[in-house]
Image (cartoon, rainbow, N blue to C red):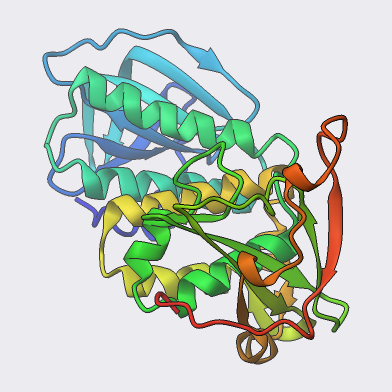
Length: 317
């Protein structure tokens, strides 16, 4: 039996079987689910489904394959075990993605405490993994600088749990954080000038909604902190809240997409960013709402200089 918190560590200990049709495996926690390794040295998760067989369509994707209701021969230490499992296998060659595969599965097993998963639990778990790896083959939604700045705001927040809950809570929303009757957008710049681009939609004003902007200076630094460094610090502050930790990890990978390596490789000066952070209220910015322009103009982007605009307090920072 292995600790479900350490799938990455335990996978390295598993021996690589010589036979193509045999998996080296070990139980995950107290469950009947297994962590396995095939003859190519690839990791597998073998789900034991409640009531026996679980329905589903086999899939063969770029980095992931899924096989339902597979008869398996498992080498469990010195013993041989046979059984029927649903298997999700990482088949890619990127070691960072392989570790991500094991890490995400660690969160899944922490959240689902049953010894045997239901068919729905298996399908939901597999969907999360597939959605994640599909996003990692697509173009990223944001630059690493922008994501790093958002993670900094979360880390510096008085309540990390509240910040994560508010973070892109509306996938189609125009702001980075949505609180009760309050929106926060994070702007970062590497120019050393407090000048940022604003879309016309972001500058729209609402009577019952407070809209704030966070301005941060970012500077690349070889010995600085990466986005993954900030993520690990945030995880500590979340104190085991598995739902929010899962959201955090899924969000950072989905945001970066095929540029996921930037999470580890790009580092920025933490102290400069922290000391430069300022909050501004939309009401103190030039009024560039849509109603001030001809109806034929449906969208525009403005660069606004904030040096002479008074910054504000923000209750969550």
